[in-house]
Image (cartoon, rainbow, N blue to C red; front, side):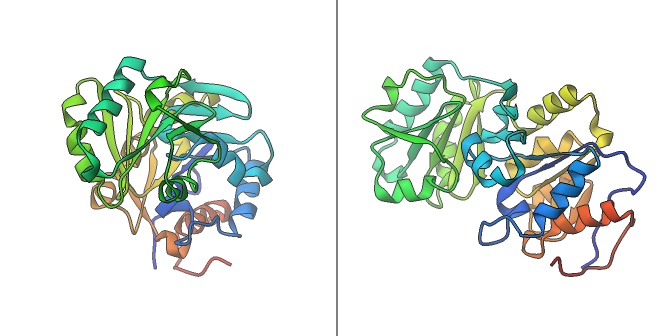
Length: 283
């Protein structure tokens, strides 16, 4: 399929990519062709940054082949790291964390909501079932089972709530807290709770500041509602062809779907200096 392209004369210095539904293939894997593309970006002085709701440790594990200096936007923008250097983070007041946990508990078992209390390094789960542990594993490499989430003393940067095919219901339960916290549906099964004004967009802007660049030197790719502000932080904002309708409307450009390795197609065209290509298979 035809797709929009980055202006070949653009001086891109940062590429930020969402993971599920965007950079990863439909099976949830990093395409093999991605490693050569990322290497080319780095050789040209372009920072590549996965930007995900996933834990920093999980992203670092997935991209371990790139070495320890990888730039990562984790936990839906609540943490930005360049190697071991923290660029940005944003912790939630413990009392507000308690409000969320208690409200979910009061909603009863019908909500079927499991909470990950996300510290910078560890995700805490309250005696998770095997089903919950399996659901959390793709996103969190470091977890710890605790008797009671309310007793965790580690700083909380995000609350991730898993409720199978029920994220809208979880968001509705938490709606009364919207004056205190930001509630974001990040997928059919997931809701993320963060401080107001915290999202992937502010993370990208903090990273831009640290790199000394602006939106016109930034390309971002996303597919879901939690990518909206990230798209607004870049001149070259790409919605995947398979993206949520709101994201497709807000983005300036469209990439092929993740099933066709759309991110790689756009980046390969830019690296080759071609303003536009006809669709082809990435190999």
